[in-house]
Length: 277
Ligand SMILES: C[S@@+](CC[C@H](N)C(=O)[O-])C[C@H]1O[C@@H](n2cnc3c(N)ncnc32)[C@H](O)[C@@H]1O
Image (cartoon, rainbow, N blue to C red; front, side, top):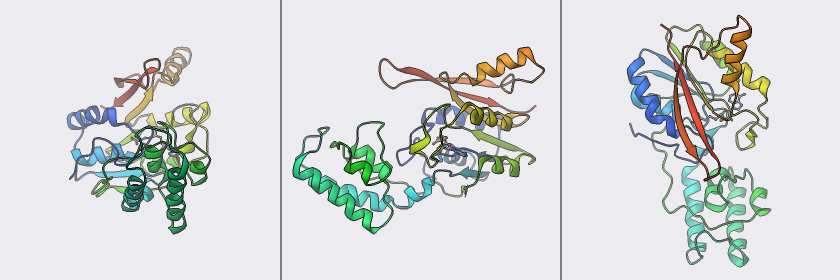
């Protein structure tokens, strides 16, 4: 099975920095008799990683964002990129696209749009400023475009091979498996107060949503992802000092990974993992 260390198509919030640590803990604590449920699947990178370690284990990927649809049109996306490479072959790299080239680029997008689904999120990495994603043609028509065309084609062969894909409310998925013996939940919710508009939901993750997720950790095997920007763990610690409510992170092991977006804005991503005794 091909081993991806990052999602084959761009995905904001993918946990590529934890792939190595996740593999280590999986190898140490689990085996392929376990069932792994990726409740907030995103790009499916965690599900894929579990499959590379335990090809025979059952792995369920919650594809809330319909990432599969993006994977299904990889060759169309590569086709569009081919056309853009020709238009921009003499255009300075990294520069804002203006004039006739901009009109030609938009024409390629408009033609593709007429033919069916276009993976605008992936195209954003080639045409927009970093971290700036568009979801539809209008998001490109009404924005500045830059020549950041990816040089090589995308390839997603075998990425979700033998992974079971579902799309439902995460609470319903949890309910379905919570009584299962040997189940492990991979829990990577959107960050608190993040705008999930590049994700499939239109929602905004509020404190209430974030706290609700903690119910899935109680008395379960889990991997939970958060960051030092979220104070949820601190809140749980505080609650357990003033009430009899148990802190779901009390017995968990913590792994930190430092991330620096720019020199000014460094933060720490965190993975907690816990296995029932
Ligand atoms: C931080 S991302 C997960 C990233 C993923 N672990 C990866 O490595 O690509 C959080 C995901 O939760 C999804 N999400 C938002 N609301 C959700 C819900 N109600 N149920 C399940 N997933 C949801 C978001 O769309 C997003 O894909």
